Image (tube, rainbow, N blue to C red; front, side, top):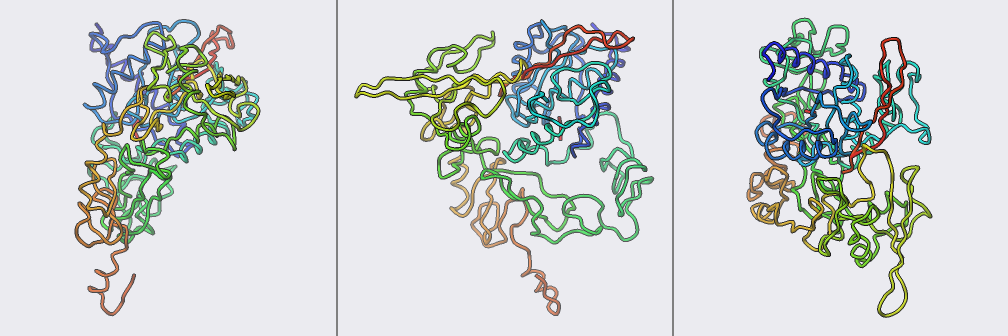
Length: 522
């Protein structure tokens, strides 16, 4: 059991990790620490030297226990347990904001807090969809290797890296375009931020009218950085619905939909901030019913085949999935169980295992160590079917991109969840849509998003469209004209970080090698 003094020291050390983690600000991402706890009596989930099992147990605990108690976007477990082999961190790739996999594990491997902070940033990068900076990718890094290099490099040592490469920025952009990180557009609850209130931290807290950061970084013409108050006749200083220190008109678009499963948001006319990001309810049909929405993304077998094999690729017939994925080996499986063994797919779940494609390029277009796994299946009526699968090695800490993604359609009214083909009715999408009077769709908050001439909450009365969450779709010009008559006026893969001994400085810092993958608050 830790003493109170040791708990305080641990919390100071842990909070320093997030202080060092501010290098995400260069990517226009601010990490807000909304919770910090030390397990001083007993571990709340099993933590062993096996990193795969530890990650699996931690993510399960997060989903079942932590997330319902304390809403957050991402959770990272920092442990003093030394993992087996060379692993010092692990996280599922492209899993930010998901209930099942938005998190990772980090080993406290250095006396310098920056060491674990960089590992945390690296694993967080995998959550965002960043791959490793391998030589084959030709990544640009503005810091030389002898000065630390870039954060997503497969290996690191002292001095530790603090910047992201051009490849990381491209990976992040690509992830956002696919709909990853839907929860990141919402402001954190400032009352629960760890570290206490402070003018200059960039968050508008109780008693503050604005907060543009420290004096030397503030470029906001509407905010006094010293007092955190508005200047002159300014009404606002921050937000996408604030322009020239004044509120934008209700109905002004402030966030466009990013894909077919996302919904747009509009200014309300009363707040400088764009409403929280909302998207179509899980299980809503998308892409002409070729897929279903899940966490704001429309996942299809076809799109995954194109990602792996390039243009012209398409899903193979169902018999390919059934035959190949019943093997339970590295080339045909339904993922790994909690012990790390490959699991066989039941026939009904076959389309949730390794993706099987036809056509496209001669070899996979993703990864430099990708292996094409081709299977010829004879047909009863004669002839054969060629099934094309992949075995892609992106690193020990990254998940297999050849597995069908969670949320992918696996049959009519069916979706892949936890490597099983399950009915979309588990989400209640049809019951939710029924209350929208056939004039709107249901969003992820189970509220109606109404068509332009109908009003929420149930789209049964005339109005300006939108939802109680996203603001009105149309500009409120009729109301303005009535008031101002004379002046009418019209917004699953998993990543590990590895270590190997190689003394690089007089401080005896061991060089750390991070190779592959397994996927914070606002």
